Length: 77
Image (cartoon, rainbow, N blue to C red; front, side, top):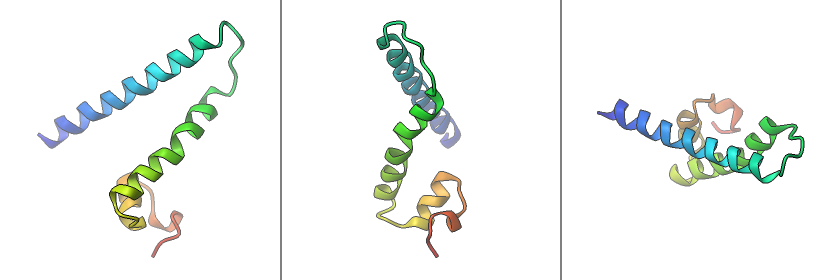
């Protein structure tokens, strides 16, 4: 059941990102779009980390586990 819920959430996040990217590209009015990967990543990276840190009440080790990164990169422990 947990795996099904995780996959449902994963698909939802993917759809949200896809929708945002499509809207952005459409809003450029045909102008040449460059650096889209960096633009998207920069736009979500801070929000992702912030949301996880809020969820873990500032616990960087727990946040690192949730994000799937080694806690040595968060400056904790």
